[in-house]
Image (tube, rainbow, N blue to C red; front, side):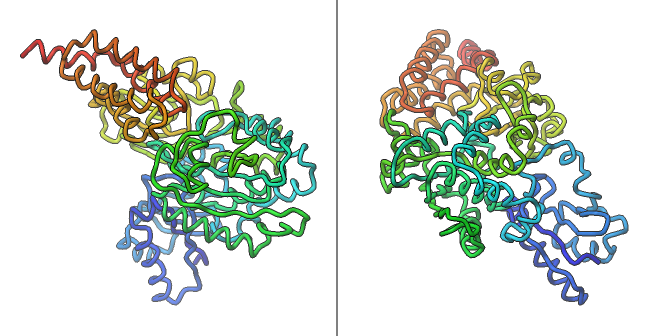
Length: 516
């Protein structure tokens, strides 16, 4: 009998009954008088198998899933060796996991998320210890040499931001983590904060040492109460373990963190709006320049990076820039945590080196649609990403390759649609979403989005389809070129891509009008 049984504490697993499963496991342990314990680990990211129960055995961790409380008694009765309807075999051998290349998510689902000892046993703190013996310029150069680019959407080189902050003179500097994960179909930030929070803490501490910052803030979206509670617990534990606070790990460096809960505004995913919100103001876009790296939080030099960007830094410092750079293609180096969602059979997290195709992601990992109908479109990059048809499924996952085809990788959300989707409705939704979420500071976004939604309604009713379609294209050009930030600037991407790749959906209104 194993002495450890793993049941995820991840919010997705909880939504499928993981807490009840954990309670049933604990009750079974006590009723049988077993010398065993329940470990609430993070999710492995195989969401269709949640709750995924894992049992530690001499042969490796054996998985069962999806498990209900009613299954627990029979799993124990089988002795974790015999066949069981829920038995999956070794979890590491499940093809969905075995085909991945996990660097950032190497520990997620493996360890107790709130145990510094478990974290260190799986390679944690190795990067931070190395950074403590390096000059700030050397740390920054290591990150630059790795080729790491921002995983929040823009893909800007992480090390360049750090170097700008390092070279800007100021008695106070900040590290700000953008954990306002609001894109549709994305959940990697939440998974990591709940399943491996010390990776983010370590990455932010390294960023502080590299740039001369001694204070950090993590801005967590309000819809993530579990992540907020888990991360705050991790901060307290890290302080006690001297990973945070004065003299981290016995060094001369000081660095501390605070987690702040957002107010539910999508616009605060934009870095300057986020900074405004952190300062207690209304979340609105700031004019640039100055850049946040020069004058950011409270007017001080500030590194603003996404959760995944910062949580990747420890592995780069631990294994070296060259090791990380060997993954990927072109200017897209390392791995990308992709999140499969929407109408897909096997939704979950996939971390692979840049270069794989959408076909591999959707068909090999995702297993096609959940409905069993043909895939018609995929949206990559959140609600402002392009809608792509299956004819583009062989484009490699690469920042430049996607941009060349009018798309973007963004935060790595991949939302799948089957052949029942109406892309004209999706284009209207893009305008409607922008109108609701606009901070209102610039006219192209504030007014353009509303006029776009109204014009799309006319097209869908069959009113002067040709003229109104041309009007939408002109409006998209104005929004793209005239908006202050990416919300208004990128809203045209899903609209224009839908019109270009699925023109038949925009003619349906005209056909209906002619028939009437």
